Image 1 (cartoon, rainbow, N blue to C red):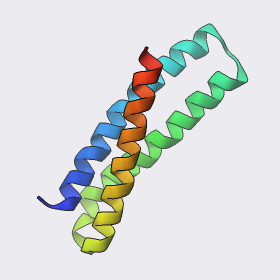
Image 2 (image 1 turned 60 degrees about the vertical axis):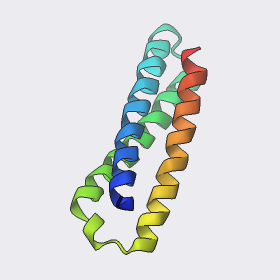
Image 3 (image 1 turned 180 degrees about the vertical axis):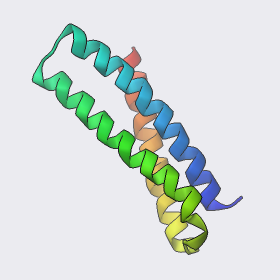
Image 4 (image 1 turned 90 degrees about the horizontal axis):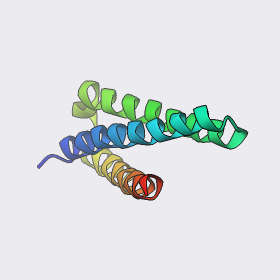
Length: 93
């Protein structure tokens, strides 16, 4: 399987995981409007923007990437997916 396709799928999964986190963070922000909860919302929003851009580039520029760049993008995206999955598990408990 092409590494670019796997990276794109993981990027889509990251978007879903981040939206799940944003749901909880915004819900908490409405209940407790503190600087910390604002920070969580901004932090998650910036990761959402980064993953949406990565997802968009996968369709427009991935054919131009060499295999080494695809491998780097895949590793980076897979680590993010793991981190967001763990954060979701902790957040939703």
